[in-house]
Each structure stands twice: as C-alpha cells, then as structure tokens.
Amino acid sequence: MSAITNTRGRVALGEYLQSEGAMSQTEIAKILQIKQPSISNWLNGKARPEIGLRTALERLIGIPANDWKTKQEIQSEREAFERIAKHNKPSKPAA
Image (cartoon, rainbow, N blue to C red; front, side, top):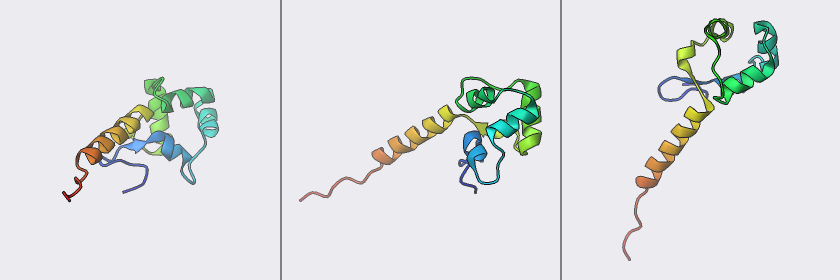
C-alpha cells in the first residue's frame, strides 16, 4: 500500500500532489483553467471542487474523487490512532 493511502485505500490528495513525479498545484490549475488558490482550498478542506472540475481532476490524476480525503480527515485519523495507542499503552509493572 502506498504511503499516500490510508487503510481504506483513500488518498491524501495533498500528499499525492507533493509526491515525486506528481503535477504541481500550479500545473493542475493551468490545465483546469482555474486559479491555484482554489486547489489549495480543496486540499485544506475549505472548499470542494465543482462536479465538472472534480471529474476533470479525477481524469487528470487518475484517482476517483470518492478516494480523496481532506486535511481534516487526515488529522482526525491521526488523533484517533493516537487515542487508541495511548489507551492501549501497556501499564508499568508493579514494583
């Protein structure tokens, strides 16, 4: 499994765009004929691409929109894993 996917196979779009060989936000913005801050807003969860743009982006990067996850989803997952790890941390043996 790739470093940019989680256990459900969903892709951290921001991590994908930062991966080696991926197009830059600027390149994608030029191809989609939109402004680069729009892509940044998608990655930060401040906005979602319109259906037409979502479809174009899916084709461009080869990843279905249903498999994308936002920065907030990534943070929520990390926090959940940290809570589980903290809860499952072995207790110190009695002296």
